Image (cartoon, rainbow, N blue to C red; front, top):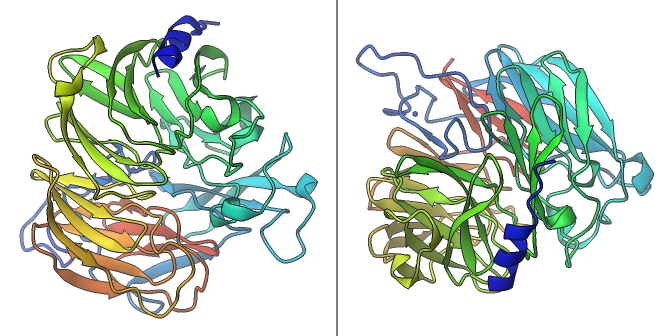
Length: 442
């Protein structure tokens, strides 16, 4: 990876359930905004909310809205607006075999009743990877939008990054490459915002990280190199008074300047192959945990410490474990890492040592079909909401002892649930390939 770091350095261009039952004490209302993938801080944690413990097709379902097509992205929420993406025209249904008809959709729904307020359609601007093999597992609307309160930003792979105003008008569109990774699996990393910079992981399309001016779409910087298969959404981590743009690639963890894309520090972690989950920081911000890898998934604890330049060295690696996850991003709470992995296991890992506290198979029910979990868990208070692909949602206690508290399922929806749910006040917003659901106490 040394040559990759050298190439990178030379190629920058400026160009929240205190229980799911009602609280017995008065509490401040839970925030309604969920502006990006994995929530406001990218950690999928809410301190307090009154989202109910049980839901179904008839219980605590406030509304359901059918979608024009499928998608694996997660919903985001801004005030009374929900934004979610899907795709139509190619691979979305039987007989849809003409790739030239592929269209992405950015939908805006009313949070109060689920009504579709507008549908911004984006025709495909380039030849996509064919709808075959692993790309059928997630499709062409995998990247979660992000909003700054004034605009909504999306990344649609080879069609590029786009910005829309809150009425659905397209403001700009910027290509981030039209290439393909070696395996032609498509991409799935979500865009994030750092100040006025929209950061896009287009390593599958062009082996490049982009920093775009969020107002105009102009390329402010790009960091090019051989990233291998780095599918994770980048993270913004604050430690020692600076904010770093952090991305795990095969073999290494990189800390970069989000304003310029320049490499600040790196650490060798040894995870091979594609790295999909987002990074998990400790609550103090001085440690970060990396999950993923292929063909063997592993996890590594990394001490960021006081060093903010160059090689952090081998002493930065706290531990290396074979317990891991391939798609869902874990949760950090009180010195433990809670994992729901794509093999159907719930794990609790001691964040100090990397050793398993428990490892339990989550009961999956009768509906099979591929890996059981893609969505990441969401922590609300001391409970984990874990949405499976085909067998409903599992509610687990977030403590170092396995406890299954409840199971919930929309039995009338036989499609996949790939997106991580959003928490908006006392409501839970879920999406499947068929519909968007709003769960709340009736």
